[in-house]
Each structure stands twice: as C-alpha cells, then as structure tokens.
Image 1 (cartoon, rainbow, N blue to C red):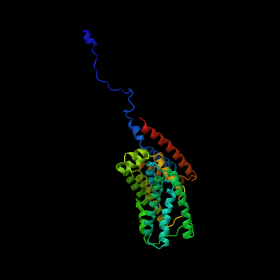
Image 2 (cartoon, rainbow, N blue to C red; image 1 turned 135 degrees about the vertical axis):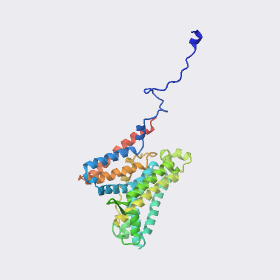
Image 3 (tube, helix red, strand yellow; image 1 turned 180 degrees about the vertical axis):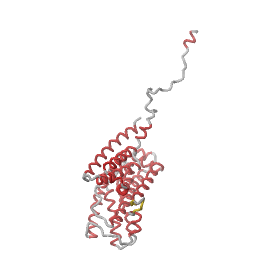
Image 4 (cartoon, rainbow, N blue to C red; image 1 turned 90 degrees about the vertical axis):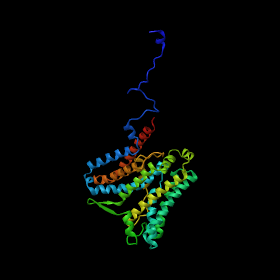
Amino acid sequence: MSMTQQAEPAVTAPSAPGPGTEKDGRTAERPPAIRLLARPEVGVFLGAVAVFVFFLVAAPPVRDGSSMANILYQSSTIGIMALPVALLMIGGEFDLSAGVAVITSALTASMLSYQLSMNVWVGVIVALIVSLAVGLFNGWLLVRTGLPSFLVTLGTFLILQGVNLAVTKLITGNVATDDISDMDGFDQAKAIFASTFDVGGVQVKITVVWWLVFAAIATWVLLRTKYGNWVFAVGGNQGSARAVGVPVTFTKISLFMLVGFGAWFVGMHQLFSFNTVQSGEGVGQELIYIAAAVIGGCLLTGGYGSAVGPVFGAFMFGMVQQGIVYAGWNPDWFKAFLGVMLLGAVLINLWVQRTATRR
C-alpha cells in the first residue's frame, strides 16, 4: 500500500445515533406517553376516573342509575358555566361576576314577566340582552382602561350583588321573586331549560345534554376555527397577537359576552326549575366555575387549556359533592375536598406546562 493511499482521509457514512446517544434538544422527540400527558385534559381525566372509582367503592349508592343521574345534573349546572369561563381564562382573563350574573339574569326574567304580566319569553329575551350587556361592559371597560380583569369584574360583582338585593326588595317587597309557574309560556320555557327525560327508567335533566352539546361546540371552536386561534393568541401574548393582526379587542369583549350567555342559560335553568329566585344567591359560585376550569387544565396565566378539561373538572365537583352525601359523611368536608383537588390540579398543571414547553 502506497503512502498516498495511506494519507487519504477515510470517507464513512454518518452513523445513526444509538439508544444512548444524546440528541440535540431542538430536534429530540419526546416519548409518546409524555406528549400525551402534556395534553391539558389528560391529567384531569385521570383524576376524574380516580375520584369516580373511589366513590364507587366508598359510597355504594353511587352505583345506582338515579344517583349517577343526580351527579351528572350537579356537574352540568357547574359545567355549563365553567366552559365559557375556561375560554375566557385561555384568553388571559377571568370573571369574578359570573356567579351573581346568573342570579341577575334569572331575576330580570322573573320580575319583568310577573310584574308586567307578560309572556315569560319576553322576560327570557330581555334577560339575555341584559346578560350580554354585562359581559360587553366588562370586556369594553377592560380593553378601554387596561385594568386587570380582577379589578374590573370585582367591581361588577359588587354592583350586581347590590342591585340584585335592592331591586328585588324594591319591586317585590321580599328577597325572592314571585312564583311564575302559572304564566303564559312557562311550560315551553321549562321544556327547554329545565325538563327531564327518561333513559332506561332513570330521569335525566336536560341540562346534561346542553352541557355536552356546549362542550362539543366549544371544542370545535377552539381547535377548528380562526376564532379559536385568536383566543389562544391573545391569552399567550396580547402584544404579539395584535402585531400579527389578531383583533384583540373583539376577542376579549366577545369572550366576556360568552360568559354572559352562560350566565343567562344557567339563570334560566334555575328560574324554570324552582319557579322563583332568591336574590342573595350566586355569591361564591364564580370561584367554583374558575376552580373547575383550573382543575380542567386551564392556566391562570392564559394561552393554555381546552374545553374538554373543564367538563371533567365539573364532573369531579359533582362527583365529590354528591359522593360525600351518598357515603354518609359530613358534608362540611366538601370544601376541604375541593381545596385538595384544586391544589393538586395547580401542581399538575404546572408540571404539564413545563413538560409541554421543555425542549
């Protein structure tokens, strides 16, 4: 062999990295299990399954069909409101007035219909306009002033709480509205907002169906429409979203109006379920809605979450609330359970966020 041949560099094909070879972090692919767990709804789904199995064992009445229907009903009344609240949180804001806004809507429909002796559908439509106007006001004031949504909606919360009590006492002379069950249009409205139907001999509330329908619509909007991209964009980085042409003002205001729509729907359900409304109710419910969204994987910082997660979050609330009763435990433990679930969800969401953004 000549010296020239010995001096020629060897040309070899690059070897594929072995199992132990370290890859560039920018191109490394995470294991499928890690990518699955990074989905915002997976953690709460596993938590919901664990809570469900726990109460199946600890509370035998839960296994009955009527008990499960009651659990789903409790979950739906929370879940219908948790959906728009979750979308708002993905958009980077939250609404502290959501709980009392439900009662404002119900009071408006009830008192307007009864005091003016009108068809209840007139009150229902006016209540929808009022609820959307409250959301419009919250969103407009936020984008106009740049104030945090905490301050804006805290002010709205206090205003609505005072108006609910004061106006109801002024008009009815009582803290509750009058019974509207014998008024024109009541039966038709009840069929839409508060009826029941039979499934295998078990009575199921119509709100369970509406809850799942709204969740499907919200999921489609988030994942398949331009508006869904806008919601994630304004929640992730408002300045960058505006720079690439996202209508930030429209998106923020419309999200608050969606919360108003949810408040109207739940308010109509309460009105046509019980025929009357207590003006002091609703206080504290806003925290339940926000907690259901957080447990469902939505971050308080915005830009991350799903519509499916809050469905499981609301189910966990309903499961714990009714499961404690069916187990024969002291219902005072309900809040403690919710606190544990909320803290656990926050820690899981923190881990999920870091996993999702890790290169």
